[in-house]
Amino acid sequence: MMSGKTFKKVQVVKISADFREAIEVVEVPLDGPKPGQVLVQNKFAGVNASDINFTAARYFTDGKVPFDIGFEGLGVVEAVGEGVTTFTVGQSVLYFGRQGYSEYLYAVPKELIPVPELKPELIATLVCGLTASIGLDQAGRIKPGDKVLITAAAGGTGQTCVQWAKSKGCYVIGTTSSDEKGAYLKSIGCDKVINYRNEDLDGALTRDFPDGVDVIWETIGGKTLEMLVQHLSLKGRLVIIGGITGYKTVGFPQVSFNNLPGQMVTKSWCLNGFLLSHYADLFAEYLPKIIGLIMVGTLKIKLDNGESTEGGIFKGIQSAVRAVEHLHSGKNTGKVVVEM
Image (cartoon, rainbow, N blue to C red; front, side, top):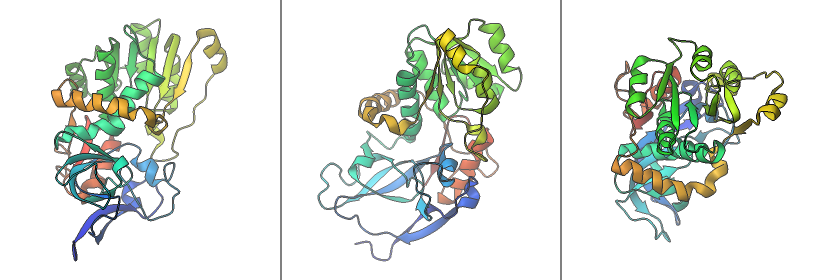
């Protein structure tokens, strides 16, 4: 049916935390979908910090190269295979799997989510939106009146965390690296912004929150994690989402705590790890909420398409490398996205 046609996709050909070194853009035949499959023309791919954990084979893969990569896609159904009744040609869909950096996707129905329209902001519903909402609710157990600290608050997940916590009646503190990002955080409801390049984060928290904060959303790792633990309030909850400072080298950076068990007992602290895939049973509950909030504009999503970068907009499969490197430079504001 599609004889002679081809498409491009990113494949991991070498296990490495250096995305540029790890991948190749390959061209493969464009065939029709097999029975039970859906063929999607991918329009947008979401970029995530853990893309380089994936190329380094730290999780979600057995590491046998070559393998596809990319957790998120947003596109249009091109064709459906025999036996598929839940999707129709021309339908807009989100893809959640491991081949998002591809011009076309072969997916099974459970990897696809129907959406009202091809709205680019919807790419932020999956890894970022689900992690923020489920993580804060289930691991952080946020409640009205809580003081909630969000690290990397102007990033793809951070921006949703800020707004989700505010919607639950929390006082939100966001950390960021520039005044421009700080202004953005204020615009989406952040009550207190700490630019850690201009002032010492430890000192600012000691000064402004002497009794500690109730919930800490931690994505940095290493020395930052060691310090932030000490700013938990009584019954405080710290949710470890990642450790991005180590992703380019060791993975999660090592930490050292002084008498942590004793402090946890005497202050009733809770330290919680969070991996989104362990909460798949809640996706059906949370996804419609997030999609609905984005569609009506209640949840505001800022996309970073690379317009401000030296190479310009992330457009075309070959720009995935620049997009991943942009995210890991720390210069992005909002969800980094590649337009296919």
